[in-house]
Image (tube, rainbow, N blue to C red; front, side, top):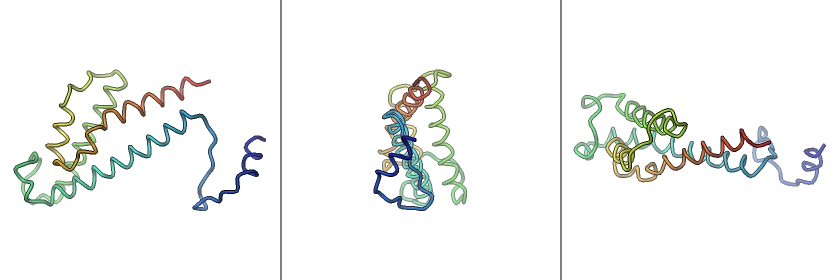
Length: 140
């Protein structure tokens, strides 16, 4: 009933036909916003992994993962980055040790180069996502 009343008062048209309206708490909004930032950063990581694997000038500045000319090098770099992200999630849920200081940041730079500066705060982002997810689960 309340949702119908809010929809009737809302004059804004959705951008796409499959857009949905959601009503929730501030915690829910923050979770969706943080999720959007997380997905954006994962896309940046994927693009960087492909770009770095094709850039021969970065050869001595990044970690060698495969033989030279490997067509799957970008994919392997991205998968290695995802391994770091999964380790951050495990550390955030308490199922493994927390990452040490700049270890994550150094590993990201060695995988994706210096242009991965935006990905170095992924540990904080994941921490916030997990916190808001837990708050939503505990919200009455």
